[in-house]
Image 1 (cartoon, one colour):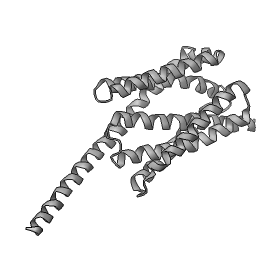
Image 2 (tube, rainbow, N blue to C red; image 1 turned 90 degrees about the vertical axis):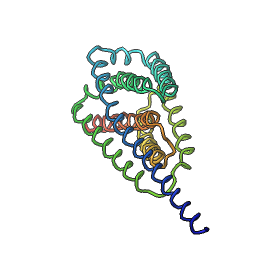
Image 3 (cartoon, rainbow, N blue to C red; image 1 turned 30 degrees about the vertical axis):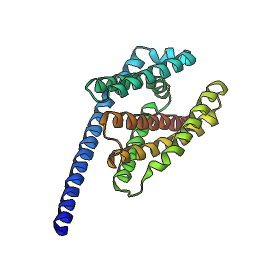
Image 4 (cartoon, helix red, strand yellow; image 1 turned 135 degrees about the horizontal axis):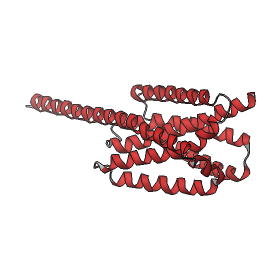
Length: 236
């Protein structure tokens, strides 16, 4: 009888493990798929932002554009979270990535105006792809639970955000470069943490997972643009 109960328990454990594996694989697959799709409205938003001249308007009114960015981003993110369990969550996510593309057009417009601007964008995109690939590999292979580092990385994010806001008034180039370098490290770490959270079934909603990883990638890419653009200017 004891052997029967033991065997039955092991059988149930296998079923639970298999169900957990199926859920994890589905969330990962849907997250990667939605993440790839979300890049389309981002590119469209960036193109529209530059073609329409919105990027120049943001450059001439940095204070207003910052307010628009925070209000628009947090409003859309709130809508995504409220609708993450239905199809409207996907539509709000795509609207958010389109909005983020428009916001990115300000930085892209500056980079394109530089010498080798297109090359800078290509290198930044390639660097972001490499970072994502490395972090994705580590998230799927490492056995250590990295969730404990979330608190420290989050604190670093707040410090960087405050420093970036302060630098909007001080306009110190060296501080801008330092902030961007640290930001690349912080958001690369977030890619690793956020993907591992899905792998470990800590996040079972693919819309929320996509939003988190998208923001990580977006910040890595934009900060690489700043770093490489800064280095390119110094060589001229």
